[in-house]
Length: 66
Image (cartoon, rainbow, N blue to C red; front, side, top):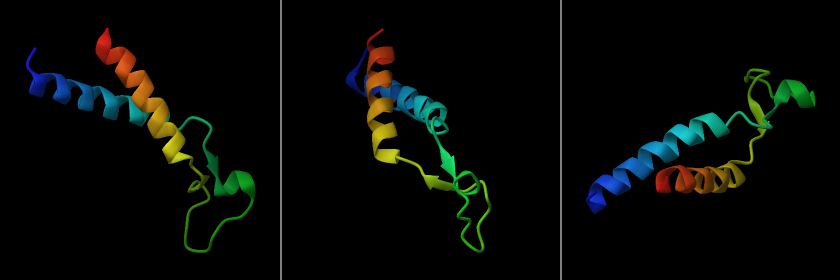
């Protein structure tokens, strides 16, 4: 597999995994009870995207190696 193909495959796996990981442990404004005016109650209050991005990278790397 060429380098470009490998990088594209990793990117596809990473984004697919990220879309699966995003909803894990998501706290919405409705859950917390502090809904900001003009937003939906289902809007995220605490999203932890940095942590989820690192988790996604680890999972994607394992899947990519396999």
